[in-house]
Amino acid sequence: MSSTVASGLASSNPAATASNASPSDPVQAWTTSMEPVAAPDSPSAPVVALVSPSVPVVALASPSAPVVSVASEPSSPPHAPTANTKAAKHAANHRRCIGLSSRATICYFVMTKAQKAERVKRILRISGGIMIATVNRADDPMPIDPDLPVPLWFQLKEHLLDEIVAGQFDDGAQLPTEHALCEEYGISRTPVHRALAELADEGVILRHRRRGTFVNPHWKARRSHLGRVRVVVPDSSWAPHLNTVTEEFDLSVAEVPLGELRVRLVRAIGEGNAPDLALIDSVWVHEFAEAGFLYPLEELDSLWIRDVYEGDFLEPFVSGTRRSGVTWAVQAETDVAGLWYRKDGVQTAPTTWEEWSHLATSRDLKVAIPAGVEGGEAATYVLLAVLASNGAAAVTPHNIPLTTGPALDALRFLLTLTDTDLLAEGVTTADDAGAVAMLADGRAGFMIGGSYHAEQLARLTGTDLPTALGTFGFVPLPRGPNGPARTLAGGMVWAVPRQAVRPKEAMQVIRVLSESQPLADMANRSGQLPPRRAALELVSDVRFLRDTGSMLEGAMVRPGTVAYPRVSQQLAALLEVLLAGAADPDRVASSTAERIAAITGLPIEG
Picture: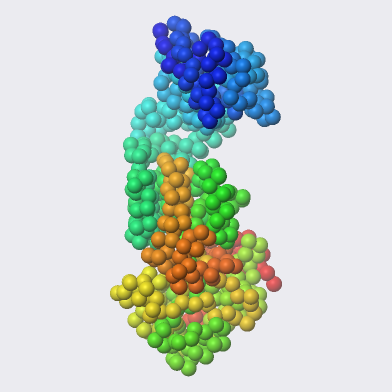
């Protein structure tokens, strides 16, 4: 079998041409300046790879790979291989085995099929390498090589992926069992289990208990649309923001109601059909990260995370999207909790609980709250905001302070709204939209809510955002007597599912959407706050955004816990029972704290 190595591989004297290398791109200049050479007519015709000299890449060569010829080394390669790593020591052993010196950068691989060359390309790419040429053979399959410094599980994973892509396993076809794979490749169960687990996490295969492992037909179908980034967002209001990147990326956008988003996203991940990019509630990050649903974003763009996200985004959101020292999401927008009021009934907004209670009572201004289980996360948001206004919290990373003095005082204040008949009718069964409607149509003069309600108020009153903000005012929640009062902040985040087909492209979309000007444009359209300092400066001429943006200083976020959905249900139920006047604040706080302790394993403070 006669094969020719592609042009640009190596001459008999690379040193003669190395002097032509461009200092700006030494690897590219060095490789392209070389003359072609023909591989011998031999059954052991090799695949030859030149890898970035900054990596101890000879470690990728197998001592069992026959060396057909070794070109002379350049007297001064662009960079010397790293010597102080475990891989470098492994590399030295391989160099001795195949007769290469410590400065050599030529590696030889024996291949059997075209798809095997793709496998080596992926290994080289992950290791920082560059594939220069391939020569294929048609026999003697390449085994999983335990002598390679590439983990066995990764070799097997790439091998199985090659076979799935090549069609050796049809859509929905069953893969061999772990035991069968161990026998076939002569390796232990641990790397086999890891390889299959990685493929399952990435959505390539589906594993069913007692049934076996199968090729995921959704994954193969998605590969036919690799040019398209699949995005899931809660509603159509995000369309203008996504238009920012439509010229650079081909986006396929699915809109899912916020109330259904979590369940449908988890189901899609379970079916191996996750999108490339998802806009999710920030409080889901810890749960999804712990479950292995998300990509660690440092793996996709560590420099941007370090220089831009950690450097210019507000600290509460950077911390809130991290778990175990890893960034799992990027804050897309933010909002702050506060007090909405109708300006036709209130000239000067209250700043303390006492002022608020007196004003509401004297003018018979009812208070709207998305209270109770029907309010969902909005009810929890309200409760946490009232606690924060008195310097209290329901859950911290270390304990449950729901039964402390400041927390109990906040609950007693909420109860006075019921005792003094200040709650708008139907509050205890109202969801978020219902509470906003009470304020919009005048059934309530106040509403505890978030800055994100501005857009809803404009829509309900049939006006634009500036007109709505002339009708309704928004201020920090009046502070309690214990202080120091803090503002609660929330919002949505961009996350890349672990199963994403195009994770790097998804990260690029995040980068573009997170630029200061697109964030400022979105804020001007929706009233939502940008979480980035540079973007906040761009909207500082808009009074509403300037005022609410100033509330972000020292803001606190909702508790980050993997059990947050169940914790939120307990807090929403507490608010419903309390505002219905059906329980004593001390007793309901104690019982709720005990249930949250059972859910989270955290101790109760006090």
